Image (cartoon, rainbow, N blue to C red; front, side, top):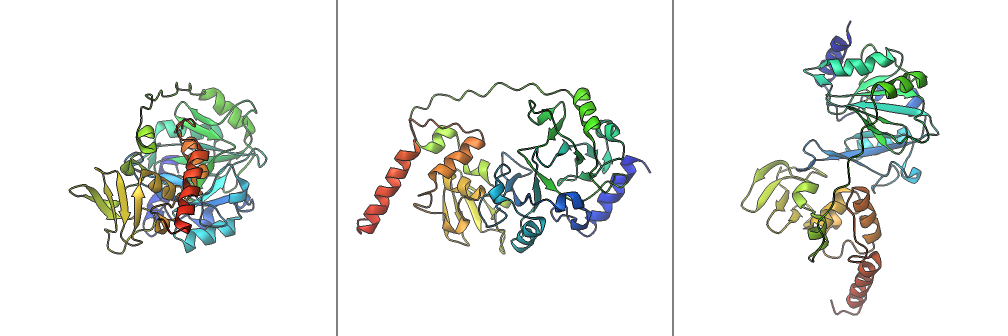
Length: 341
């Protein structure tokens, strides 16, 4: 059976009764399940990320997770319990140098349930000696092996593929290619060969933002509600879009709306909402949807700014220093305590 036939059989078989958003728990290798570096994650769809952005969650509570922060990781069982209890999208595994497991991510190499020539050229480097699974969107593959990139080389894109061995969490599906190995095996020599075949992608020059001349933080950063999260099954309205809440769904299918004119959003289930910053905080697990509203970011500014910077938004601390934002929040709390507000 060829690789193309193998992946076709596996995907067709799985899609008859279960979606890829529900991992195939039995297919996940024991080598990964035995390591306590797991996080549940949710897929948040927006205009910027029409297929969704994978947001890691803290395995020990409902807060934000971090692929570089072990305090947010847990065991496989812990992550699975939270994923099933809260109906999160899936399970993720945080890669570290210490574990010595790498992942090769090949996107869009499955076309009409068959692996294309480019995907086969990557698979040929490994033969069938290690574990390979279909990715969450069913159009890519993850190749896992034991080995490490050189200490001086950071993981990332390499001429059509991505290789990581630390600082990244991988969405694990458990949908193994038919002809691949069930276990993760030693593949250092294959990894070294792959690095030679697929050279490191040149780093693009950083985007230069226009100087900020005033306005809000959202104006400065170009934050838009419709680019952060988008209603599921959205319908156009006079002011924007309305549909199901992308974070917790909807019984009616229309409990979440975005006003593009005012750059605001509202959740009818929780009677909560706000601007782009509040929506960004919800999408990153900094606050819960039900808590969004006036003053909800008090005490969360450092965490919010850190998340923004991780996503590439560079804040000028002279314009919006955390100390000033926190001082304003403290003043507002004092006025509330005195009954002025």
